[in-house]
Length: 424
Image (tube, rainbow, N blue to C red):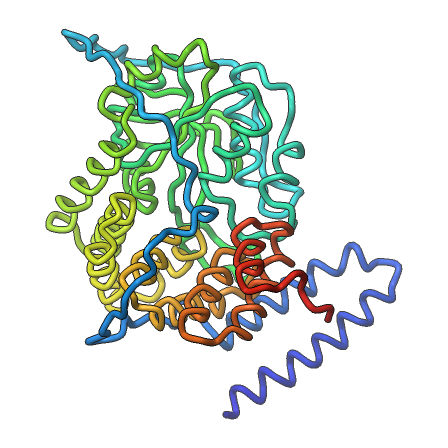
């Protein structure tokens, strides 16, 4: 109780300081420092790495909904059939693609995703930049995360280029794609020192891979956080990529489609790709330990969600979250449900609505600034089934503040007969 009182007094003091800052001519220079102090205080008194989700034991599922909310699902992609080569062509020992315009993510709030997609597009002659992508994929400036499917949507809806997104990739596949003339955008997890708290913690990050060198055993990536032509060891990239189920995105012009599908081989089919990802995760569960094993269990759940085995996915996520409790708190990837919503699909469609509520609440509470619209939507969906319509409307309206016109939120409100959100 004493700790809570101290935090309350400090928060009130910080609010007063904020008002003073906003009244000064230096408000633009000082406001971010006050905000950083607020975040540091919240994390000091409520360490997010210590708040772990515990799946409900003996949770008896009720009858799950019979259909998936289409607006929240990655748009279906065409199924391609690649013509397999009779004899694999040996890859060059070194490849470095030129033609990507480098964009960093700095100077604008959390611009990792816009910067990386802009780089991937630029290789094919797209003349825009990160500020063209940003307002579309994250209309609320401080949105914590832009998902891979949102980047793919941008390519489909705002450019003349095409795109594929897949999971279960391998280092050899990355080399084959680059050698074939296709830069690859991947999402990975890495440990970075936070600017607000000074702690080193796990967070999501995008890279565009443009080369590799077998002699040095490195990939050459365009890293929006660090530098262009950043070198990363094969083993390091694999370990970091594991945190996102080895997902990747390839942008390409329509006339290059047949060539790309030939390089992708069996990955040309999305369902096959998901099955490969599930197989990789199943193998890694028994060969890895600690945080890596956590990711393997989590990835198995994510892959089974993609294959619509929701009960199997829920069991895999249960194992992941139980393992997470035993990890050293400094290595816990506590942000993972900022970036990946697979557990919500699994628990919701296996009838475990209270687990959806508990996990989303844990996720939102872990963020000093809970700008995570997807989490509000999933909590609302679960609460609708649980009969808590008022709470659901509140969450859906909150999600629209953080992502105006977010289709899943709008459709859910319409289904409840709510034409507009109440004004505050």
